[in-house]
Length: 462
Image (tube, rainbow, N blue to C red; front, side, top):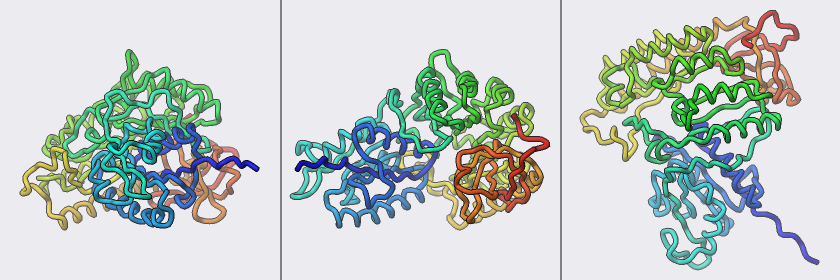
């Protein structure tokens, strides 16, 4: 009696930004199209891929620890494939194979189209492939690290998670080359997908029940393809039948234009939120970071947006202790935070990345670790205090909420407003993926507790 062999099983575990999350789905889709079954745990898998971030040293240390844990699977089942993909894989390259003996595959962000073929080559490749032939009973090892000037994964469908929300990657790579950032070196230059394909993808998502999309790019608002600009693309996406909410991340302040702001103000599907990374409140530091704007021009962008979308929720990224940052320059950053009053801020200590210009600055410019930590703690205190004040003023507001998941508290669900405010309220799994009208009754500082209402007196736009 013949039996049909089961398909190979793959598990993808992702760390890092929204782009990495989207890439994780992309890899799952590529593998599923070649007959792989995507599973939920590494213990079920024949292929385990750790999709990584390289933006900060802490993230890499965390990933290396996780790879060490997964090495136990190799001891239990020597035939399992353990691969490392993404930005950290690109940055470390073949050194990762040498340093971590149980890693079989290292693949950078431009290699995913060939992922199934690479997995086959691990078992059948000729002896001169990769960094060495296998020892008896072991898999071959392979590094796929070529950066492509044209690889934007045009024509490939992502494997979507169930639910009403989806990432739509419109751009890969970056041309800005900020001195602290590793992204241009591990993802290559900016590569934009064609506008017709992006719109086709969004229409297909809407037809499949997706109503909430996030457009992704390293500097998403610098998107350009033929005669398409980002404002035109954003407007077209917002007008796709069935699309109810549109977000975009991560924009660069220099490309926040009157045309973009006009689309944000007039298209009802575009959510009232904008992530605007400032990085520092010091002009000297911004110049050394090669951010290509000043504090004054950044404030002008903020005024432009708030003038057209008064209710906009602004978020930002801030780095403290950039090499050479003085105490007075750090205080300038705190002053900017207090003046602009961001709804949320993602705050970091500078992390040197080998290969970036900032990593080559004189050692004398390095801010002492204890001083860097003091600055980060002070920044977090200011940012959280402002966030709490803003959110306390939100109490009593009525908002449309998209229910995204069950809360940790039994009998509650978590949803997100159009201004990216997270709200917990009474409900069960039957509400997941639905839009509800909720009163924001209380705040914990960062999130809200609310209650569903049937007939709102007023709501957020639209």
